[in-house]
Image (cartoon, rainbow, N blue to C red; front, side, top):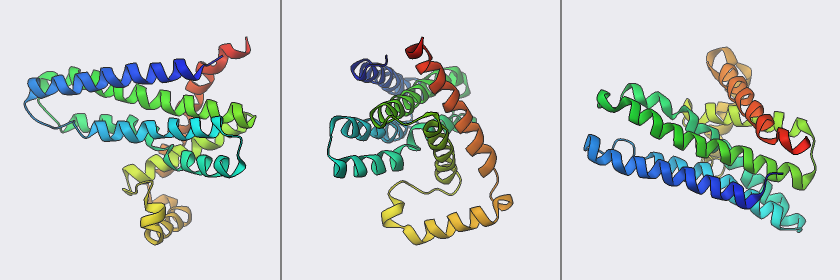
Length: 204
């Protein structure tokens, strides 16, 4: 069974490794190109905090708001997977392999955060497999909103009207908002598969 303490240790280890490589890159490339990855990492790890609050409390009020905040921040965890696209533009090319390993570690931290926090919520609430499928699709759609439409989680509060208008346009004209369908499905598929792999041995 997946233990929260082991989960947190894994996230801490992978996150520290990613940050160490990022700091090391400052000497290799002599620029600050990838320091922003640390902000993306922070956002990717936020869902773990709200999942922990959901699990630890028996108060329905806290459950409700912890779940909403967890769901709102959850797409930030898979979003970091798409940061590989920056490798096409950020040099120098001589350390492209280094950048790939570094971004992979950031991505791995985000994946552990998604899988771990979803597992914590599912176990506490005793929801079935459909829960993972639904949040996988919501996460994939959230990544599209962040990567292509450039919305952030907090725009739900600070910028609700443009967000609502964009959502209406996407649902009415998905063909004009490529690759919303493909990105939603592929990211959902990837995380559902990894979730199944990581939780498989709990049942055996």
